[in-house]
Amino acid sequence: MFLVFKDPQAVAQFVSERLVQLIKDKPEAILGLATGSTMEPVYERFCQDAKAQGLDVSKITSFNLDEYIGLSSEHPQSYHYYMNKFLFDHLDFAKHQTFVPDGTPEDVELHCEQYSQKIADYGGIDLQLLGVGGNGHIGFNEPGTPFESRTHVIDLSDQTRIDNGRFFDSMDEVPKRAITMGMKDIMEAKQILFIATGPNKAQVVADLYASDYDEQMPASMLKKHPDTLFIIDEKAAAQLPPDAYQVMV
Ligand code: F6R
Image (cartoon, rainbow, N blue to C red):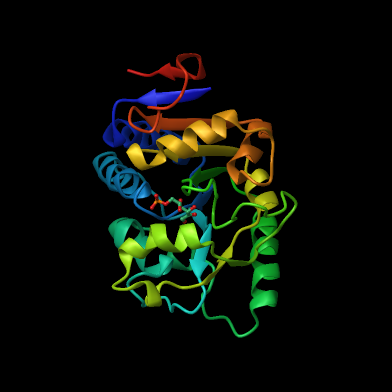
């Protein structure tokens, strides 16, 4: 069942309220964070709400979903850079507790293994934010990624590279590979907020609704997660049958 909000701002308000409440209840919460256009209004609203309420985020630990291979943390299109720009630099996050996969590790396999291990060592993710790609990817787990996977290197699909090409000056600059948290790491999060907004997500939302539990539609894994909210806006809901969603006011 999808929860449909009027627009991305209403989605952001709802998600921000959930984040604020979690952090009030558990100041040392472990967050799973995502990047991308979908999350920009979410982080903007969260920063506003956190500041207005004097929320202490200094005890938070966070794990990001993914990073492009080959981009250093200073690269403006890296997800390290994105997180600092849209979230970490605005609040009193303890930077050494904000983990993002390293896009330029010496030993990439070891780095992947250690990333999943570190999430487990911290006791697992309390709340995971997820966007969705036009092909159903979550994190950068492209269609066909095993549901049992841990953090790994992925070849980005042509569709993902084209979709994300909008952030780069030319297609040649769009990385071909990324490191992503695995499907199983995501599935182990205690709570998941799946978020899709805008007309470009209407098709994938309808495909997800129609899909079985199927590795070709990565987001369909969430149908078996015990505590996932599917949060979308009216434009992303445009191709859903009316009985597939509940309108939120
Ligand atoms: C980003 C990520 C991706 C994006 C997805 C949607 O960390 O994990 O799965 O959430 O590609 O991106 P936007 O929000 O830009 O449409």
